[in-house]
Length: 346
Image (cartoon, rainbow, N blue to C red; front, side, top):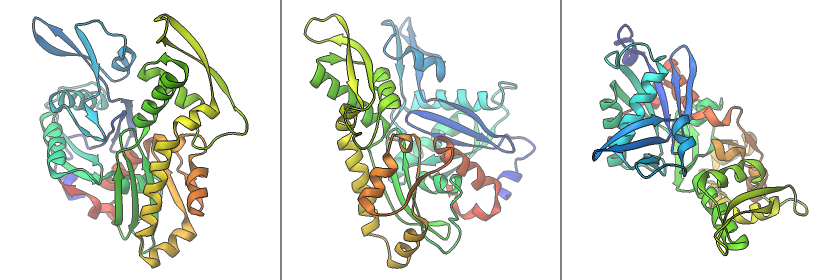
């Protein structure tokens, strides 16, 4: 591909899924080389704010930092909220993806995934952050297209394919055909909203304040999109009792978590149904044959596929390696000439 071959001798080509919760990096001829939380720990000394650690180490600090250290996520709802911190994070991940050998002078050609609903200003912020972090050239690809390619869907063929990418900050719903997007919608509901709803529910129902990390653990352990028969699995959840102010532990059931997640799951299902209502008849016929493919971390929520299948009457499958589909698809887009047309100029 000319875009990358021009710099092949001087740069490392890579695709980056810059997610609200996790950043995944795909390197040419190597596959996935990095998958770490999109978290940066900042330390303030003598009035100067510096990056202390990034990724896995920074996530361990969330909710546990002293006053001079702050662990933050520089992205919100799939777009950059703090461009300076995001630039430092991207620079760290690019360097680490190269194996940590060699300075950032060895610049890279980069493809970055963006939500379909992102504005030109938001896309420019992503481009500028990547350029300042060491990218010699930057191209963009819409997340839904990248997810479909990574899931193995035949997006370049004259047949309709439907993909629902449930990320940390946004859910992308798209109808694809002939290498393009026939319909797309992005709703700002994802894993973060689910964590917030679990935290709010436990605070309201059990008078227990829990942290962001604890809410995420509950979601991963017993989170589900539809209620189980009876209470289902029960787990202990620790936090601060709002009545006594002391540390406390309560038992939370799978049925309670399903109740807490009813609103965000309902919003995702509503977005899928709205997409189907806007789909041209010929593509609708293809979707009946091929069904709906779920990607992203939210696709792994218990019985999410069943919830969407029940609401639509269609076959729904979760993609293999759903967590890394977007980065895999972006990487394949710059390695395979067949996908040349899906890359956008930044």
